[in-house]
Image (tube, rainbow, N blue to C red; front, side):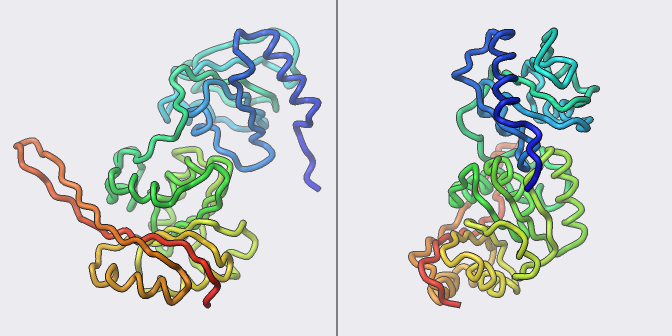
Length: 304
């Protein structure tokens, strides 16, 4: 059994320490032990007024990542040791970007601009490189809405780099399995994972039972339509006969055939929609973007 760094007694002692030394209302606090599971601190801070995070020593860039995500105005309450005793300090994240976590300890992050929900549709320019920049934020918002992601879901994203990144933010205490067949796209994915400090994404290079055997079973899948799509759907249904599936395609023939393909595999009541986005350009002319089809459905019976 894995040793637990922060026991209930230690967590309570840190909670008592911050209760005595900060003006923060304890009712507002969200607690998360980042050492226990691969949890993402940034989206949790974005959506909560106060987060009591338990961190392990050896993270030199945590505050830089928070600042880079637009959380520079957040205030961090902390002390210099690994025990909840002694002088308490507090600084803005923007003043802490050159320091890391030197001791395993608790820290309280207060976000005055917290939102209750994650904001869908990151601007494509926020991504580092790769295919992430080719999918517009408006279309990505619709896709993520169709996926109905909860914070503890396990999601398999196949050839959808920007979808995997945003899904990891939304499933902040879950897992994202990002499948990228192309080495260049895998490198871009790893670059974005590091850039956004995502701790719940695993990148693999293909889809089969062997590649996914040691991972959590996906409850949601996103697929960019390809020649291997049917094999991918078969594999996912073997892992979870009741999986939710969302497919993206620019090919109207593929879109037209998706309902019959879904029915063949026990995926009922498939919804097929097309999304068209036009943006007004600098010369008052509308720039029409690619209009993909989005196909979504939930498997009801095992039929593979």
